[in-house]
Structures are given as structure tokens and as C-alpha cells.
Length: 594
Image (cartoon, rainbow, N blue to C red; front, side, top):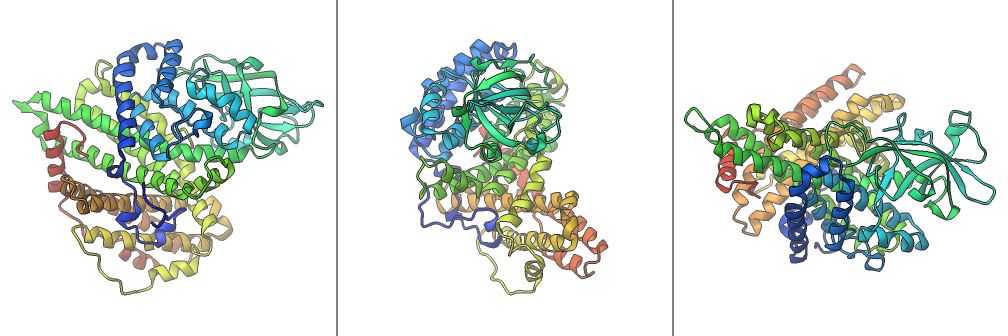
């Protein structure tokens, strides 16, 4: 792993710094221990999950339980939880690797994630010593199945608007009444992390004052009286259980409060925040699987007397998937590598400090969630198109992938919500740097040394794109003033610029590191970084134009738009030629080439 002497730029600080290759953790830096865990997970999925996918899709939850138990027996559950509770005590990158491999089966990946990420992590980080010793060993051994109950019919993204109530009793216990929706593992879980508003009397769910209740997390056993609704008829993820949870006078002991009464938002948002980076790895697993299946089909399918893999527009699709897989992996491993380094000085048993440290990377977590889920959506759509009519048939695997992928833009915070979180967190963590003075400084003419090396033009662009992001955010917050919170379209465009900057820089750093280490794939990696920068530069320019035009309409000096748009100019590359070269490497290897 990286050493503590390296720079850790969290919370968007990388917008103001140069992201050097040595400061960025990449997949090429995995240790032998990482690779051993990866191989164990890969073999488990290939040998024990993929052969029974159809049974899982028929809702055989006894089989799902057996597979969770088997994963736990192999040491794949709670790899980053201390050994004293039954985990392996390894780093966060290891948990990312496991999430990646598990998601070759999207349905089981969801089942596993609800246990390993959404139940184990909040218990480990916020639970009392008694709670951890009581529940963690059974969860980590697979004996007990967990689920996470946050969403409700009327409060999906607005989690704090939950209507489930927990009425405090004279003896200190609580009585839960209400209903949760869309709960993964809901049909067969044994333990639930449930969020409700604590009130002191028996007012009804719609009674005045309930919105002022204390939002609180609870550990609720099914044996307390939890009932599951019917299985949801979903578009995808048919092999994972998704039900409502019904709480009707469910009594929960006082000692089962998770964290503190009234502090449930800390549990809810921070756990989801951390889960977003792991979701990034799961999404990239889907992109690579879509690519692997697509290239195999393209080499076998013949039209006009030759394999369709030889056609330029098919190569364009294969290259696009490979580029996205390369960039997405660079982003996910960079973020978790930074988290691991930040945690080196933190006692891993101090859940509060661990979570505060992870919270410092909320911007990066949202960036990864948005980017990777949309990359996955693009990849599976292209895979269906490449398969043609067969892609629309359930007899071929990409139809299932297409349906399974759609949820990733919705759960663990919709992409719309995450786009709004990015500027909000940037302002909260670095308010002095994102204001009109900072915006003017970002646009000021300044001499700067030109980067050197094979990716010099891309390095130069990313430096200027960072200045663009600062100039947009600072000017927009000043111009909109009290109306800023309602300027969601502008916030989303700026979030897209920030996201693209992070993606470009991550790709460049990974490619440069591969070059300095003499990796035989370094030239191909540089091609991927060039292609992605070229594509992202066009999206950045479009976003800049829209925001600058909106700001000019609000009275900003007319010189602002041309100034910020000049910074966003990128000279471009022969992306068609580079994509063909990448596609040829994919076709030659028959799979994702990195």
C-alpha cells in the first residue's frame, strides 16, 4: 500500500493540487495478498454462483443463504473488519476487490453487498461493544443474514422524511410502527438496520410534530415481530430478494439503538457514502463482463462473410467499453487507496474516527457512484446493440445484464442527488476556496510550465479544467446567492465538470504509473487516457457553455463566459485511430486488456 509520506487530497482538494502518479493507488499496485483474495472470489463466483443463477432467479432463498454462508466460509465476508469480531482485518482496497468479483453475478452481488456493506459496516462502525460481539460473528460467518431498512414509499431520496416511528416506552424500550420499502434481502434476512423517528408518545404516523422526531437507527431482529411483504416484481436483479418490511408494534430493547438517539442521519448517510465507492467496483465488474461477452460474440458472429469484430462501428463499441473499464478502475482504486492511507493513523476499532475519516471523501464517493453507474449503463446498452436481435432475447446473457444494470443509477442515492451533493460538500469542506475571489483567481492569466511526457497535452488540459471547475463553482455560488440551492441544473452541470476532471486525472495517473513501471500495456493505457480526455473535454465544454450562459443572464460580466470557455479548450487527438488500436488489443486478447 502507499506510504504515509504521500499526499492525500481528499474532499475535492485535488482540484487545487497536482495529482501525481506516485500519489495515486492503482490496480497495478495490488499485493500478493490482494491477488489471492481476488482469485478466491473469482473461483467462488465462477464455480458456485454462475452455474446456479437460474435457480436464484426463481427466488430460491435457501440457496441464497447457502451461498452467503459459503462466501463467509472462504473468508470473503467482512474482510476489512477486525479479526476479534470474525473478520480478516485487511484494508479497504481488499473489500473493493471482493465487491468487484462478487458482482459478476449482479443479483448475488446485491445480496452479498446488503450483508457485507449495509449491515456489517454500520454495526462495526457505530455499534457498542456488546452489539458487535452479539451480532457481528454470526453475520460474518454467514449464519445470520442482514438487511438495511432506510427507504419508504414517500421518502426515497428524502430519507429524513421517514414516517416510521419509534415510540419510547417507560422502560426505555421502543415500539416501532411503519413500513420500509425496496429492502434487499428483505424476504429472508434475520437482522435489520432500521431507521425511524423517535417520539415520546403514541401519536399516529401523520400526527403533528412527527417530523420533529429524532431520526435514529436501530438493530431489529426478525424475531422481534418484523414481517416481510411480497417480493417486488422488478425490472432486474431477479435473483435477489426485495420486499417491504412491516413493523406493527415491534418492540425493540433500549440496548438495540445503533449509535445515538437523534443521530441516525450519521449512520445512514455515512454508510451509504462508503458504499458508493464499493458500488463503483461492482459497476466496473459489469462493464468488463459486458466487454468480455461482447468481444466473444463479435468474433464468432459473422455477417457479410466475416466476423463482425472486423467492422469499425463494432470496434468503436468494444473500445468504448475498454476505455470506461480502464478509467473506472482507476477512479475506484484511487479513492479507496486514499481512504486506506488516511486510515493508517486511525485506530480501526474507533468507529467514530474511522467514519469521520471516510466522510472526508464524500465528494469522491459521489463522483464514483455517478460515473461508474452511467458507464455501466452505456456499456450494457452497447452490448445489447452489438448482439443485435439476440441481445434482446433472454437466451443470451446481455439481456439480463441490461435489466440488472438500470438500478445502479437509482439506489444508494440517485445520481441526481449525488450530483447535488458534490458542490454542497465542496463548499462545506473548503468554503474559502470556492467563492467569487477564487473564481477570479482561477481565470487570471498566469504562466505555468507545460507538462512533459507522452500525456503532456492531457496533463495540461486537466490543470486548466481544474481552474474551470473552481471558476464555475465560485462564480455561480456568488451570482445565485440565496437562490443557489434551487439552481439544481447549474449545480449538476458543475458536478459533471468536477466528475470529469477526477476521471481524466485518475486515468492519466494510472497510465503514467504503468509507463514508469515498464508495464507492457503502458502504450495501450496511454491510448485509453487520450481517448477518454478527448471525449470528456467535449462534455466539459458543453457544460461550461451552459453554465456561463446562465450566469451571463444573471448579470455576470460578459467577459466571464469567453474567459472560462478558453480554459476548457482541448486540441484533441485522432480518437478514431486510437479506438481502433484499443479494439484490436481487445479482440486479440479476447477480453478486457487491462
